[in-house]
Length: 66
Image (cartoon, rainbow, N blue to C red; front, side):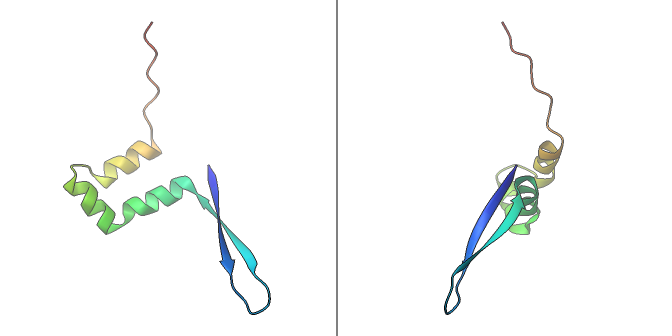
């Protein structure tokens, strides 16, 4: 999944939008790499490394029970 973030650059005569493509997966992994985020997750009882592994290698879906 890709999100496009628009940032308007201001100039004296014309405003030109500049688009930056961000892969959602890479954005999430980068946020989880932040030491402050990692510390907060740790205080809540989670490990950023475990969350990153779950994102990179999700468990197969469980079959529905009838």
